[in-house]
Amino acid sequence: MATHPPSARRWYDAYPDVTRFIRAIQVFPAEVQSIICKAVVEMANLEFRVEEQLNQHRSLGSEKLRAFYLARNKRRTYDQNQYVHQTMNYTAILSEENRQFLMQKANEVISLTIDYFGLCKHYQKTPSMDDVSKITEHSIQDGVSAARRYMRQVREIFNQGIGSRAILSPQRLKIDQQGRLRSAE
Image (tube, rainbow, N blue to C red; front, side, top):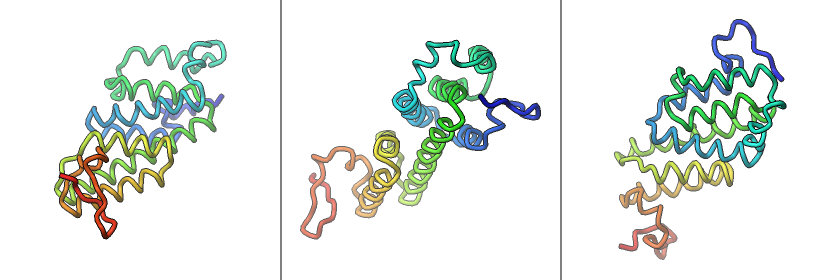
């Protein structure tokens, strides 16, 4: 179990990857925060069985248990969103190696989401929470390259002026003779 340096105001100040995550996630609207953090929580449970660890309080150690107890006061900015709160609590109890892995994945999702919002701004499209969900799911379940493929499809659809929602329902898409995606409408 890692001990936190006395100079750290918050437990995560000692971990640049967690600090980067919390600063970035707070920039997004609450709905986007929830989408990203739900996926991170799901990954933490699948990969590291965090829920089981929480049920076995003995194995956490006194420092982590105390931090978890204090988190219930919900005075921190990230505690206002239940999924961000849960993500941070899960992150706090993970081992160093598992925390780094989880935060790497979470920060990749944030980077992709920022890219998506930039793409929407460039093409003057309204961001779709369905697209954010798909990007998050692809990144966490299938890897960053799968999420980037999805982003390329979104960009192609934006280029064609179809709009982002079309990509979410494959039955509304068709591939033309040149191999490009088109709206079936």
